[in-house]
Image (cartoon, rainbow, N blue to C red; front, top):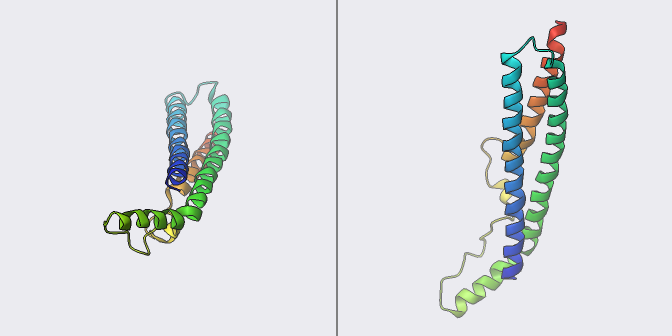
Length: 145
């Protein structure tokens, strides 16, 4: 059970790191494109850059939603075996005369209810690309106003 739990946890961590790596790269790309636009507002490539930004942000949003779903999928798997894993762990601790974990100890089960302050980082990871998309739409239609 321990090896399965470690494997699931490792895969969940991999997907989470991928989620934030994509987020970081796309934020830098969009920031660079916005820097280009603000420094060259009359450049003939403003339209192309705005369409490119909208396209990239659409792909970014869809990719982030997919990665967020994979992270949650791994967490559901961890939640499913967590109780069994901790029971096995406690048996091993007791067999070695060590103090066992509290009976209600959890890591993934009920974690959605654990923190109430702020906004979910996964929600932010999807909301920021949507905000960038909105900004690119403004860049695209601004010349008409």
